Length: 344
Image (cartoon, rainbow, N blue to C red):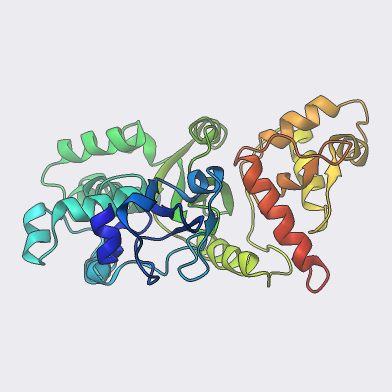
């Protein structure tokens, strides 16, 4: 890591941050600032860990902000994938483009939480699922998706989606996308009707939320992008820049009538303000259901857009937040700093 830091190797951006004891700051591996001596340096796997250890972010490389797109060495491969998403890729294909497979694997693990081959296989199967939804023939879909046999397609489909292609044809397809933010990567999901998921990638409840969403929607998940995710990604960028008036991306919020009432009450809280659980309970006409309001608040699957971070204790102090209290404080400070000049 120190060698990569000294070389300003962009391949390691997002994999670790470098903290300098003598200055009390932490940086990206690519920071252009003068390099310190090895004995003054320690490394952390995330900005959160560096912040928790008392370091502050560098003002030159701004490690709290999302990295500016993919590194130059990978841009050509990503363009080829987008141009021909159903093609099968091997390590030999990568080496033919002078790309070391291990390096590509590390980048995809850091950005998407899976290897390059797992990502691309899931992407191809997601496109296949879309074709099946449109009524295309199963055998034709299998071969056009790059599989050499129908049995191989069935096995791969079942491993990714947990069911056979025939049953998957009837399932709700949720396309998923990792979105970089100043607070770390988030996992977003959307059906054809709207956004149904936005969670921080390191949230411990993420797996549970995916299972609940799968049950409520009868869903299968696949990497991809649609118009709703594109809208959400653009709105989040404007939100973190402080220039968003309101989120307009359509939402899909499966839940009980009580949960949906709580989530609508959360969306009614103006940016820069907070409400207590008691105030939310009163707002929905259930003044004695304070604990139930707390549970519904915790069950919210669309962070920031449904602003559960704006709920605090009756005395104004912060309380539980799935993304961590440090993120909750950051979001509240961010909104309060801008509420006077532009409603978010």
